[in-house]
Image (cartoon, rainbow, N blue to C red):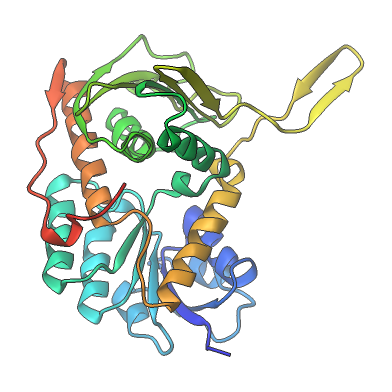
Length: 341
């Protein structure tokens, strides 16, 4: 039997700790070989009870730790570019959480670095492509039974925003998932974005423009709208409805436990993305491990990460300056020319 894939996990915060748990207890064919976080106490806590794991304050040290054959990046977005380039330099396959790199210039540098290698090493963590409902919607749209897609209506709500969350982050962090999902579901690039702001909700921190209404245009004339509302107060909700020539399809309705008791009834609403998309994360990481052990890279790649950063950047310009902003991508390197979204 082949040895399990030794993975270095960079970042031991909320997302990183969950991936460490997943690699150790859920995913087959892999093991946590190293964990890196500037807060080594947090890293040790996340890795507690895992045999053979080393803990580091420095990401580079974790990449060079014994037994490391692949990397999972779950550190904050601004640290991703350096970590990706370091992994490329060592020839290590990478699963990198979104955003790949927050700014499009840095994301393009990652694309160009991977293109110089002449082979893909990076998969980007757009986990909605692995969600059962999104996969069913993708298959339905690709099958053509509903005709041409005309519109996508999307909703993205969080209970509350974390400290330090900015108005721009509603677009370049939260809506980045809808950006990738729209490109993938429709098989089209997003060519322009307009961000509109209603008055902020009562629960928004001072200075935070929340909610926002984001409108994307696509290369073949479809429209995508997103309501993003990160302080709704009641739950985590992600919905998407595709409206086509011959019908519509909607995903994301609540199907949790329904409770009826004296005086009323209610349905559970997830409070966290790790709950709503737990199965998608499991499938994503398992698929990455399986592909890596087979010497392949599948799933959304560096070009998808760059495209998401570029569109989000245009969205932030619209938010800050007003009006419609066009998206102007760099030429796609030959390495990604044949990729299918």
